[in-house]
Amino acid sequence: MRRFINPVLKIYYSMVKLHIQRLIALIITLFLCFGINAQRYLTEIDSSFFIKDTVRPVIKRFENIYFSGYIQPQFQVASADGAESFAGGDFSTYSSSRFMLRRARLRMDYILKSKANLPSAQFAFQIDVTERAVRVRDMFVRVFETKYNVLSTTAGFFARPFGYEVNLSSSYRETPERGRMSQILMPSERDIGVMASFEPQERTHNLYHLKWDAGFFNGQGASGTTDFDSYKDFISRITLKPYKINKTELGAGVSLLRGGWKNATKYVYEMGEAPNGDKIFIVDSSESNLGHSAPRHYYGGDVQYKIHHGWGETELRAEYWFGTQPGTQLSTENPGSLPSTNGVPAPTYIRNFNGAFFYFLQNLFNPKHQFLVKYDWYDPNTTVKGNEIGKAGSHTSPADVRYNTLGVGYVLHLNLNLKLVLYYDWVKNETTQLAGYTTDLDDNVVTARLQFRF
Image 1 (cartoon, helix red, strand yellow):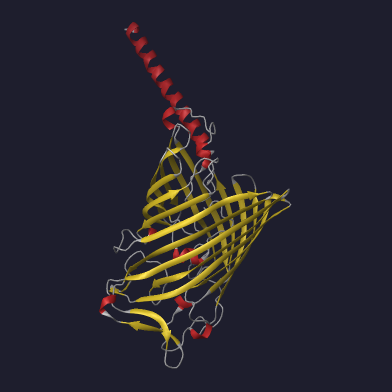
Image 2 (cartoon, rainbow, N blue to C red):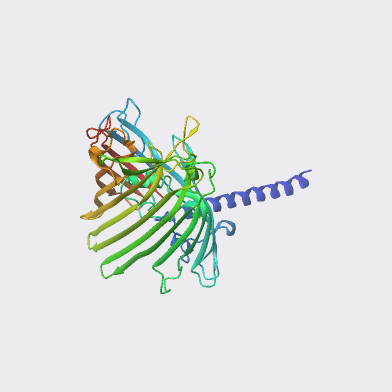
């Protein structure tokens, strides 16, 4: 019996030992993969994926998997209970302070590389897990042509190629939140669609600093479970990646969106002039309006300029958007479902808008300390101003009110993975004849955030 048991035990122990070795190797591999930094821009490929010997795989089957992520716990104080805010959402009715987990994201990328150690295919999956919900933030596949290494096609749920601020990852953005205009016109920053890209992967290519994205998207982003009409958004962006000139860097981009969504009724309101000269919404009730596309047209331009010093950097950013936005009487947000009131389709209101974002970023003493100032505005209806809003018979509403926001902050980079952000938002709305908007709302917010990124 002993002669039979001993060989069996040896085989058993050897199998256990082998599994333990594999488990240890897997853990080591995953920790090595965690060392990869998250991507800076939502529509770009992290170039560190393709640097030779950046990660030495321990187990062959896991060498193409990379993990990244970040967590952003924060504490906020508003200037009034129940403040309506774009600094992480509205405050509760009886609260002016809160702890919250603003973002907690984990992303996995599976990368297939070509013989030239450049990408041939990518699968990405990212989730956001907070006390409010669990959401999918990315789910897409990207396929590259490997002969010239300049073209790729992306399909799935991914970032819209419009604007600079929209595409700057929240893990790298210096301010706690994107501007009001970004959040209203580009909610969740992502959408379902397909996109073609021209982006040379080799640094020796003459057009390495040029990137061109163009694609078709449903339009509702993450706010809807399915596309509610047959109209699609065409979105395109041409980007000049940061180009170094001595001790400076220059980057720029232009963006275009042409799309719209279905009019659920025959009633379409557009700005016009009343007989007495007042600027008002005038209704068009032509039967041909029913089912027709309400225009959603955006145009944008941006520029980034950076100066390198011995003790840090100075950076200036400017971005401007304008265009036409469909909405309802009370909102200019892009809807996740066909707009309705108590189940009854709502009339369409069409407005011309503009807005901008301006950043000033300055290191203090050394790269660990950073001072920042941001100014942005969103004017959802450029045709009416101030006391013209709220006049009797104008059909205007809070959706037509312009907001200006001045933010001042300080960032302490404790190390490459950990930073502390202190930030204050002064929010100023234009005064109107609307009830509740005859003076500036009490909606300033201070934010203290700790971020860990891997």
